[in-house]
Length: 379
Image (cartoon, rainbow, N blue to C red):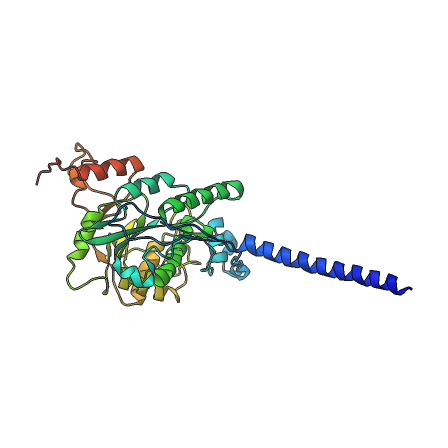
């Protein structure tokens, strides 16, 4: 073979090798771009001069997923359990999920978080757009109230699949671009994953907002008088969030519901004990930053229970702490003196702290009615 021909063959092999390497590098970078994208958006500037500047928002996408624990199928009578219970047991160990929407600067970072007096932590499913919009304009509006900063964050997972999941995720992304107030993880946003949502938030708070004084933890369908909350918390004796506080609608002397038809069905395979410790109804409760940290620390060694408010009570009990009752928190609904009175009379809501179950239009109207300077209520 001539020297010229050998040189030509060698050059061809070299080009082939280089081309292959470039293709491998391209595919690797492509997978990184699509599986761990970090998209930065600009700083949001608020026109309200009383509002401290917020930092840039990060959208982080990751491909990490938690694997199914197949050994759960060996639990006694596993196949007789409803599908949702079986699914919960398969994935009960999973505590780390990709974060889709984040705002690490919500509290102006770990060191600046001491400026947050009351952090509103609101559980909200992706499709509840109307609820979030109303809350932003009413009781969850970020503001300086009686000299204390109120901050807001919505907690969400993902729902549906395919195109519908993409659309709802895009909705949250658009909201987040405008308001900087959503934390979203890539897990199924279902009733049985509410505890997971709480744990993921507490993990986020430990890193990004550890010095917030107090928190309201609640659902997006509660009516909360946050003006009254600030007043109540400011009047606490010798507690600026650095001591234990966990208060709401106290529930005592109850245990797991063993009827499979119930939404709250908890079989012995999930929780063996027939009793629950004291806890506060999950519709809404107040707690101190100190207690939030205690609950997070306890949760590291306590197996997840799907009923999130009960799980909080279990964490408190393990820490030797107790929840307290507050007569202004009515997660079981409001009581009225007569069936003939208007159950939406603003005078019934002017002095409370929180009531569960309000529709968006009712929320909007009630907030403005209790702030009507011409409102006159009897004794």
